[in-house]
Length: 307
Ligand SMILES: Cc1cc2nc3c(=O)[nH]c(=O)nc-3n(C[C@H](O)[C@H](O)[C@H](O)COP(=O)(O)OP(=O)(O)OC[C@H]3O[C@@H](n4cnc5c(N)ncnc54)[C@H](O)[C@@H]3O)c2cc1C
Image (cartoon, rainbow, N blue to C red; front, side):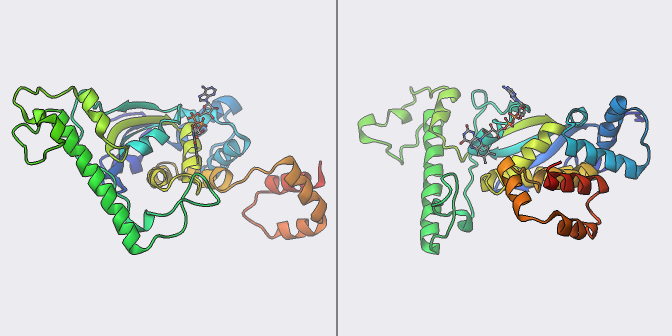
């Protein structure tokens, strides 16, 4: 069907592609609205029709992102289908500007699918970062941890099925002698799915549709690609970043330069720089940097001079 709407070849080619994450998860694009031409077009509504060429479009995108003109980036949207462990979903849900529809474990029975980390990802608690891991376990220790995770996850699903009343007649496991095996009694109807799920640990997989605009996607990707973010959510952020780079390559480049790999200096840090750097020497050094625009060089020099 012919359409005059903006279509993006990369996303059209990848609409069914599952970008694999962790052991059973994925990210897949379900739908989208616009691409970087939509951002440029929206910006021109504010700034007039001055720029037109491809390089001018690229520079406009860089300018917008650098100056924090975020609303043109809200003019594009993307909808992902994701399969992810519940503990990763809990971190994603903190990004409030996304719209979410999650698989209902009140309505349906969850599959027996849980995340077990690779041996090298099973690490001790970091001593200098309360929210992280670092160092190594011995192979034997890591294997034993993996066994505990596996046993816990399998046992939990077995209990889930018992509570759902799905294990009738199966008395080969005596859960607890005090219960007198009533769970295997034909009269036990099972409890509601919304309650039975309480026994499942947070490494079980859930699924959802997660829709976000470009501005909030870039913010989320900065936070969740960062080395301080948990490895497991970073895996999803990396897959989404790959999708971003195919969908909007100039936005991706600008995001790397002005968000992902940039850093905000405090007033005190700038004062320290001013004190210990000779602006004249720095000006000479800066001349050789062809990938810094004239305007950015001027801004940097003015910052150091205190202008
Ligand atoms: C490494 C890391 C560790 C974290 N650790 C913890 C933790 O230990 N505990 C914890 O609770 N959270 C934690 N978080 C979550 C964090 O505090 C933020 O909730 C999360 O990063 C979402 O950020 P956001 O508010 O910018 O995003 P969004 O919620 O997507 O919001 C995007 C933007 O919309 C605006 N906005 C959204 N909602 C409102 C609102 N109600 N009022 C005003 N403006 C709004 C804000 O300007 C915001 O920047 C952590 C996040 C990271 C990256």
